Amino acid sequence: MISSIIAKRYAKALFAVAKEEGQVDAVGNALKSVGEFMAQSPEIESALINPIYPMELKRSIVEEIIKAHELQGVLVTFLKLLVERHRIQCLGQIVESFSEFMDEETGVVRAVVKTAVPLSPELQEKFAEVLAGISKKKILLQVKSDPSIIGGVVASIGDTVWDGSIRSQLQGFKESIERGELV
Image (cartoon, rainbow, N blue to C red):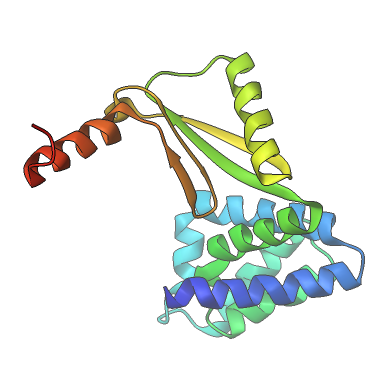
């Protein structure tokens, strides 16, 4: 929990500087690229996090990452700062938070739709249209298959969830019977 709060603060600061410099997209793409690299290279991330390794080694690793990704400007300073302040382990969460700030800035909302079976592209498009109408924003839809919901759909935007699954209806019936409401 605390690391997500810290990550949000760092992402917000980076976003503010990137916005001020008119580099939000460039910084966002480069940050995502570095985040993906770190996620695929756990040994490098481990070396940057582990207190056993000297700070000089960590700095040289970050310099190599900067060169390899051809990073410039604010992102170079930002990555060095994360290593110096022992916050590099928050990079994945920072990338996620930065993306959320970018979405908010551009009026995009991420939505998740869970169904028991995969949806056709046409149905995915319909869901995106319906959710866009509800939220009054552009929707980036993520569709997941979850056979445990038995049937129906569970859709969510942020903290709002619409549960039209058979599983939740059956659970509701079960609770009603246990309370003695259904006879």
